[in-house]
Length: 105
Image (cartoon, rainbow, N blue to C red; front, side):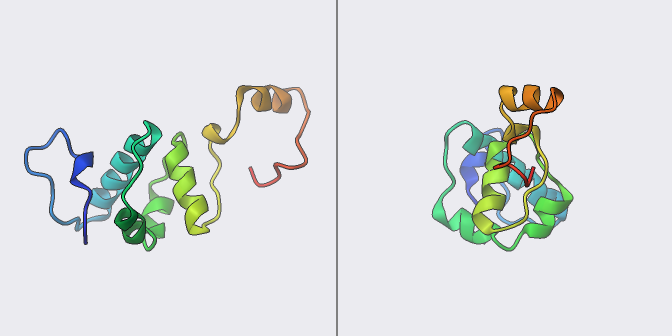
């Protein structure tokens, strides 16, 4: 398992392996936070996470665009999240207008 240690700037000694689901969930959260701020994951990170669907399902990060991007790139079903809706879309929903192109949210 190759971990991206750049997601642990707060730790002097980043973990070398992740054993528990909670450790994996924290790693996903850190990766998503970095990507949300414009730092893309390394290609090997995508290879590592492709088998972590259970972690993504159990610990959703609904507000993270990166979290939703991982799910989309891996071909997993989307989960509801406010990040997928722009302000005008929320207003449209509130006022009863729907976009026929956006049926999966």
